[in-house]
Image (tube, rainbow, N blue to C red; front, side):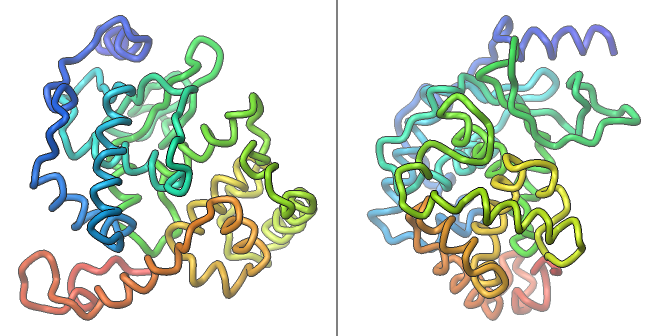
Length: 283
């Protein structure tokens, strides 16, 4: 265990680099498109030109950001989901670059603050580094995949952690991201967030409890909700939906429409049943 932990630390701090053959190539492979069509609803609803742009932005992200692990070989699919998590929140900002990120480190399970898994306190699925770990992001690989496989639970740890990076672009992780300050809607933002956190504490909200931790976590949790269940968010929290829509500048409701259509389509597992009666995740 100690030997493995030393390897984790060395890899996380960039002292040990894995070879990344796929990232060395600028050629997009057809199987990558097929994977994204199956796993990433956001990608699935884009038109052909937008899909091509999404692919280009994935290649650009992976050319500037390492995706590594100290215990297992990182796959192309791992990289595709990490990159998708990064691109989805900033899709409307065409020239966006995460200058505050150098590497994403994947672990095989949830972990603790010392980046150890299999311990009694190993319950963290995503973490943005600070101090000596600045410009690093750690994700549980199973949680990363679950975020894209279950589109009904209002959770996506990859998007959650990249939203923290967006929030930190102005030097503070305070739930008031730099981009939001450019919009008039930003004036009552803290008042709105405060009321929503109070509602969570009072058990009068369907925003998950972790959002009440602080304003930064509320912004990340609300953003997960926005990208996973936009129609529900608009119905139950219209002001919050409007604020996030202005910030992200996206017509995110078309994802909900795609999911509704997909419910009645043939299941991707090949069973012959409708998706809603086979592999559709339960609410």
